[in-house]
Amino acid sequence: MSQPRLADRHDSAPNRGEVPSRLIAIGVAAMVLMPLAMWLANRSATLVLGLAVIPFVAAAFASGQAGAFAGRARRLFATPLGLAVAAFLGWALVSILWSHRPGASLRAWGELVLPIVFALAIAVSGQFRPRPAWLRALALAIILACLLVMFELASGLSQRAALGVGKLMGFVFNRPVITALVLAIPVIHGLWNLPGARRSDRILAVVLALAVAVLTLRSESASARLGVAVCALCWGLSALWPRLTLTAAGCGFLLAMIVAPVLGIAAQNWLPSLILNRFTVMTGQARIDIWHSFGEVARARPLAGAGFGTSASMQDHPVAVEVAPAHRQLLGAGHPHDMPLQAWAETGAVGAGILIVAGLLLLMRLRHLPAREMAPRLALFVAAFAISVVGHGAWQGWWIAVLGAAVLWFGPGAATPQGEDHV
Image (cartoon, rainbow, N blue to C red):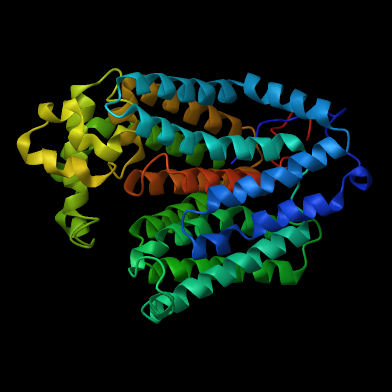
């Protein structure tokens, strides 16, 4: 996944000798510990990213980079992608005006915005540039988190039962599993392609990939298993046929966004029973029924939606009376388990259209990268989108924070499109 250019040659390379190394070390430690933090508390990614912001921004100001910090931020928001993201956040905020619970919607909006701000602040600080030692540390942290989750699943969560903490159900590890997958993608790429990469680094990359793959198979997260499969397929194909794979990914993204309001109908009519029966009850027919319910909401309020953040209590929204009685009960599912459908249901065609533009702009940036750099970033985009199409709520803060951290771990230099200055 590509990071926009943050600075030109004149302000992009702060002298490391002048930057307080202890502050940077604290920030890096927080970033490295994210997968372990998610194992302990499966919504903690936003907090971890927020803790990392403080030392990185402090290091930027302590090294006399305050002016560069502001300049990078301005240039970042002036890009087409930056403007598209800002437009969606602005429209989402406006849509709260017709929410039935404005306070809850505003909190949901804040949960979305906060990790975005944290990730952008770290990026424009110019202090986080992944080094080989940092990549190795994160790889080890992810592997350890994978082992801990697998141990807990194998033991029937006996440790948490003894401590009396958390929900004693296997699905609580779905978020740490997805976190391990998303963060592993830039780390595997980074370790494999280090200048003068040692054999040990590539072995570590392979071990990391195997640990994540085994964890997803042992977990209850069908969306994580889908993400692994899509990631591996896309990474391999884009390394061989980058333009064709990128085009296919763009078409798939566009199609998924457009058909979201009728996703339930399409899945019910076209998804083969052989595939549907392989899923558990919650990820099978019940998921399709939820898509039916929220699809009716999207079709009832096609332009502006029901208001940002309303999915959590959609059964109490006035639009519920416009949904067929047979489908109203599942409006209480909390969210549609499909990001495009949630965007349609809450922000209408306006919000969904802005997200389509943002996604296509991001893919257009990737097309300027060499195949070796484009492949893992496209794999991250496709895997994350596939997970969001069948998984959790679209705006959950932990998810946005994990995605932001993954983009940061790719590092700014290698992701700079050809013809642009490096960060």
